Length: 411
Image 1: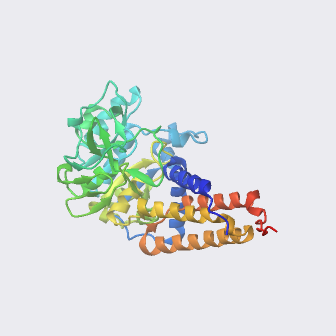
Image 2: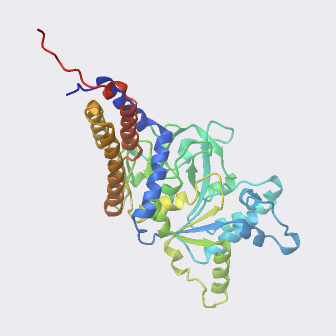
Image 3: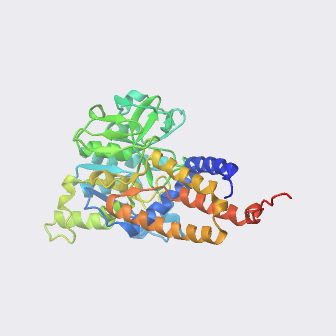
């Protein structure tokens, strides 16, 4: 029997550690998870969140016919709304009395639109719970002290991996900020995964809630002082809900949760408001908006991933969390690969190749089963890279292909 290969064991352990901590491979793992979830599980029950998304055609319909002109390709996604157009949205949605109204785009406009801002402010003052976006960043001239932001007082655990910010990059005018609740988001330049959404940030040494978590708190009529934040473990809300929390302050969003979100175009909302005002039979019944969170976002908004806030809110409301494997399980996978590597020369090349193919198929089926039945996610990229690395090493291992020398007795 051939001796174990100590150098390959060391390489596998180091490679496993590097794969585990490589952010690009983590994002690849998240994309694979999203694909699996789309094929493994049905959508959770309907969530109490409605997404109003304004796209290219909606932009054109908001412009008076005499001033309407064709937009160049892609221009609709880059165009921002004017204060009057935001005011039109608020006026339409207010009649349905939603629990929370959140506006994802930054309420910042050109100097020529400032004269229209008072119209928006008049409508915004009528919204009981209005959530507007503030973009975190480095120190600037318009920074806010930490005392002006909602902050958690009951925080335990290590905060070294939580995203830190020292100032406000962009924010709406003071008039709008003072009649609303700030929804904090990271700057667009920050690397992010479409599957992981920050729940908390470290702002000037204080732990503060992000946009989707603040929306949940407003919806539950809860304050940050009533919330327990156990960093790297969970967030405990006053009603007993527990939000699993990664060490970096994010949660893993369930992609299947998108199916539990109600989506409307702005035209749908305006039509429903018109039918309500005229006591006509509704084309689409929106009576249940009274108990919901309504979010407005721009289609193609570069600040946030598609529907990511609504998906995070739906995941929390429906308790449809994906449970990733713990670090102990990850290291068991790495150690199992190291054990295979130790005796890789004792396995023929053909058998090792066939075994790797069978392992890949079986592991994929196990992932599908665990996700569909328990929403449990084992690391995917890690074992595949380790196993196929061993296969490649074995295929090019010249020493392992040499026949073993037989001992011939002397004399």
